[in-house]
Length: 526
Image (tube, rainbow, N blue to C red):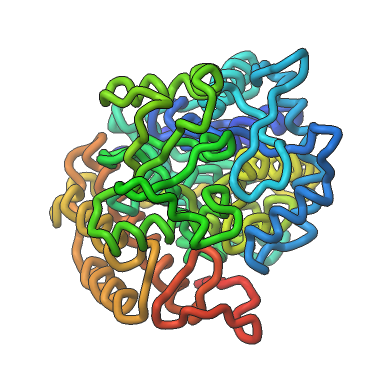
């Protein structure tokens, strides 16, 4: 078996979305940084974010109102201090994005502010309806100009390294084993610290707005290494993905409803006022369940998003990408309504961190969608995710600057390389099975029976070896399927432990909120 190439660095960053890149730009000021991303660097959940970044910029808005909106959406589980830090630091971090070259839309010489569901004021900075793409572009250009950052594309983190640190007398994270996907070669990265910023879990579901790289790798890696996870039962389904929902469903931004669009049944009746006093601007969990209920009640395959209340000029200026996507499907906006369905969108839980990005495993940090900072609670407020990524990546970079002085050098690790041609079930079959059972049994509406059936099916999968076909993409696909299986099991275990309905976790078996027993995070650890 070949010997892996050795790479030594101060900091290994896994993931090239907004969390990983903004952290790297801070950390490279005092450390050498290696960034590993399993696909092309621009392929991330950040790149597909349409809506924008929520921050207080309007004189009529306030930090207190942003905090209050976030706490309401989080259904009692937000950590108030984490939310206050997010909101207080948010405007400064957004200005930093501008300094890095992000071009937010402007109106009358000032940044243009949109409104989305759950927000009491207009506070969403955006770049038309391709905000994530604009942020990714600017950050990648900034990273390319930094000599202390090495970016490894098409490299896949197979497993994390842990060692017993005699100085601290405890286990610490010390790097990772990485597969060069196209080269078929192993690389052992010895790192004094590791930042996991590997995105979410949307690809665990049959219909998702996420790209196919959102397979929960970072959560599986961190949990296997010994880090605790929290609140994985809270999976956010975006209520408005274009129907038919393809392999990666085309999102219709919540900002469309913020500008006046309303949801209707196929017979033209507006239905959201019957579910929530805010109508189509209700929180996402309420809207997604309402869409699901109306579709089940009527037997329709979709509901309609009616943009006719919006001025055509506003549609063209504010939502050019959505307008193009609709035109390709023969839908003329704002005249024609858009057929929409819910789709898996965002993981509110993840690796449990403190306010400075530290996980329960020494030397391992997490930021972005992969982390559970306490900000989102049981339901993420729209457009708080990109803000969370930059705020807590900034805080982690400050914490790590101090921690590196205390972390000793890395001993050379004797890696046991896995077999890249292991026989077993085809990865694509395992993926399909997981995505179907998660959609059918662990979706928008759950029950004890459906969750137990999902647990049984995933346990059965756990006994199957998954094929690793060759030394490149086939091997990565097999390992990804293993990660999906492990994270799906964690989501189900978390959902089974929460025997109430709260936020994004709704179960017919326990339809009421239970503050006496479940006003707490759901934490799992080895």
